[in-house]
Image 1 (cartoon, rainbow, N blue to C red):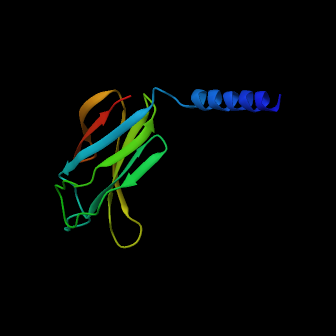
Image 2 (image 1 turned 90 degrees about the horizontal axis):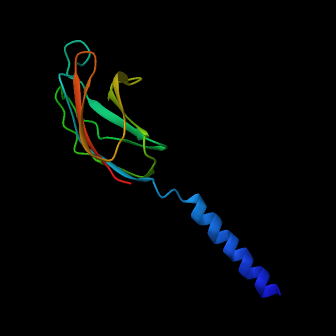
Length: 133
């Protein structure tokens, strides 16, 4: 009788584990992030970097010194991303004191590979993402 109870308990746990897994979530890769015409303070060129979010996952790119037209070498790979999640990129200038916010790009993700173009105040950001589920 004890072995039957143990067997049923394990069966319930396995079933709960399967129900908890969302078979529709999948990985996203964000890459080929670049910008054009970024403005620094006064007469200087910016030291830009990008913060990337999708779902509860996030990352930060490398800082590129004195780049008005940067191409970041970084790529971001996030797993377990639900369909219709929002992908957000923020561009920042690394300065002494609090960093300077330059703008935000957001898009609702959909399956496939997509190249996005985002207009900031006086700059443009380009990035590609691939999402499968």
